[in-house]
Image (cartoon, each protein chain N blue to C red):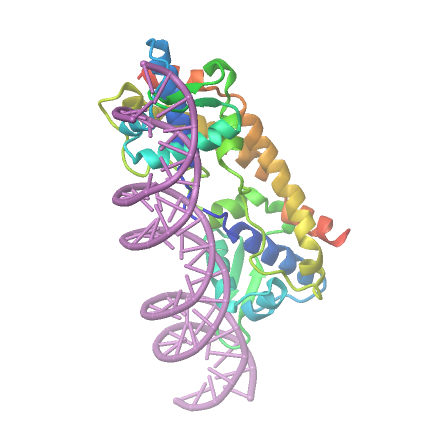
Length: 142
Length: 142
DNA sequence: ATTCGAGATAACCATTCTTGTTACAGCAAA
DNA sequence: TTTGCTGTAACAAGAATGGTTATCTCGAAT
């Protein structure tokens, strides 16, 4: 499939929140974030909703409502974000069950699960090595 | 998107070819492979076509046509297969360009490309650590 | 040269995912 | 009570995926 942009949108929003927080603005709205990402505020709210469920951001309701980082940008890794917004594994197994009468069809799924698990573990470790603060610093250094 | 099953189908076919080759059967057809994977022969041919372009299998045309491994199963890694069947990156960037007037929107794409590149590199390294022979052995050991 | 079994490929379909969008209800601070 | 923003449902467009049928092509064997 085409790779989706959920991780990108979420990291973008968090990095942007870290930037404006550093500038003294505390609460931000989904519309303001949408202006930076160049998308619809509802898309941003969907992303922020997942980030909130993961404890990465906080929301305030009522008049003057908005969002705020719940943790320091230095402590939020891309792995935290990935876990918050993505649930599908990197590689899918068979669409329909393979033939159980074939020795390969019967036993390949556990074998693939193990192999794919090692790959996902490696990817997660790499994601854990970069923080939102890193991304923001790199973004502003260009 | 939902993760696709291209890597799974390709690895399944290659492991199955390694098995039947070990049993002395050299040329196999897409229909036979489709029976093990439990899908349509055309789907198998699409996968084998990509594997052939990568030099992992060979095809013979004409009467008594069929497919054969072009390399030893011990020498084919999941990274070889992945490269053959997948071209999309693991994580997509923005669907529509972020706002260039925002410092984050202006500079985040190179930053993300670098971070994502490190993750892909880690995933590729892990994929390179497993061979078709490994998968087949694990599959048959259950 | 003809036959024939298989690959190559185009075309089409249903399904699903993703993103964008509108609309409206809910909430709490002022 | 007003106000501004979140929460969420609903829907649409577009693309990707996998399955299917149909037709053309190839080349070994006869």
